[in-house]
Length: 151
Image (cartoon, rainbow, N blue to C red; front, side, top):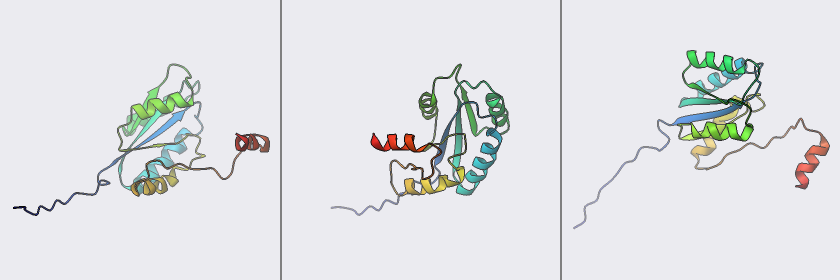
């Protein structure tokens, strides 16, 4: 004899942690605005989050500014490379040290607006495994853009 068992599962998107990985190299002019804009945007999406910043051997005051932010806001975690290992190495390290259910990667120069992250999270919640942005306005010259299209 079979019994009917009903199992009610909570939504998998309840109480999630979002990790934002940001590689940094000599971005002292952007750090303060990055903090303000990203923190403001994060308050609107309502999920727990951490920001994993990877300083890629900056020679300016980026690292010192990030350490000050971490002291006041422990959600901002700072990894510091001893020298410049490159953008991809910084991203890889940030992903490795992330604790989130989902990882968003953005640059510190604010060309990727933090205010747009909820759109990406919405797509992720629709079960997309990878969500990425394709730029519409490029600062690169026509020759470089044509080279990209060619390859």
